[in-house]
Amino acid sequence: MSRRILHKAVVSAVLAVCAAISAHGQAAGTYTPYSIYGVGDLSQPGTAYNKSMGGVGVALRNTSFINVMNPASVTARDSLSFMTDFSVYGDNKLFKQEKVKSVSNTFNINDLAMSFPLWRHTAMMVGIMPYSDTGFGYSFDYTDPDLIGHTGNITYSASGSGSIYRGFAAFGVSLGRRLSLGAQWNFYFGSIEKTYYTTFNDASYNSIKNGTTARLTGHSARFGVQYEQPLGPKLTLGLGATYNTSTNLRGTMESSRFSAGSAASDTLYYKLDNLGKDSVVKLASEMAFGINLKNPGKWMAEMDYSRSDWKGSGIDAARGFTASKVFSATVTDAYRLGFEIIPNANGIRYMSTVAYRVGAYHKNDYFLLDGKKVASTGITLGVTLPVYIQYRGRSNGITLGVDLGQRGSVSGSMIRERYVNFSIGVNLYDIWFRKVQYQ
Image (tube, rainbow, N blue to C red; front, side, top):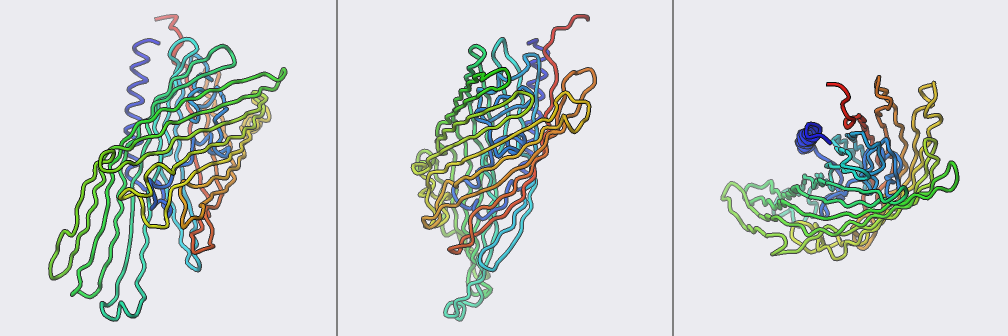
């Protein structure tokens, strides 16, 4: 790789990452009452490409797409190519709790990733994507006649916002034609702010504002392996596994309580905790396994399983992470299925060259509410529309995906979410690394 090309890649990556962080920070990454707990709502894994197949990708190797699910997959590529993946998503939810209904709509950046070769049989990818998002807001009036008869009307309200991002750099190497290994460094950073108000309409009583602001950083490593075994002239069996280490969060947790009214204003409480010293909070480790069967260029099917144990993470005891006594950390796991078919990749008719995808998933959240699991079940649909570039011999693509599902239930005064989420991804493919024949 020439110094000029390497410089071009590095500058492009830095500018694009800065733009992605700025754009994501100006809008809510999610809106759900479940994000009040822990580190927020964990993001669905992968790019628009992965999301359109139920989130699979642990065993997946595709030379036309960046697969961020397994660092070993970075070696599945044309050795002369530079690839970029960028996607956005729209999150649309309908909430129901007993007889109360509400809706929310958010739109934001999902990921930015770049992949390029290093030297023979090795490659690298860098990128950034949200790890978790916090976004909620609600209010209610106290109705106890014995209470409001003495104090007047009382309103309680709460709101929260913020995100934790994951920047990553992955390195992969192929050992022969069938085995690939990968290692990835993850850097987590972001902030989460939660505020709670108790407001008295009677001016003779002071209103109270409670709040926490977390500023977080952390590091982890992910290791991956993929193996492919031909089953004949047309079929290939793929196996994959990843392990992501746990993360000790560092940073600060600022907690405060203020009273304000016509008579006086006062600071009732203020404390600044240093995470890692005054309290220990972790992002849990995760292991994942996948099995893939494909006819290259025709169709592909994959099944993934992932598991992460949050019981020892400390988020259900640390200040600012636990929202109520009914919240407790637990084991989260997920089952995912995905299928892709291309009628005729080299066909004359455009629609026969389109990749069609379908997927399904079932996952349990990393916390219990009053001892009950919070589960999500959904199906996904998607297509990749090829965009041919003259004189390139390969194509870029635009991926469109939709995720339809449900989270939680209406039993036991819980909140049910029904959602229709959209994702749009752009995969850019270019030949950067061929030798110049003429000056």
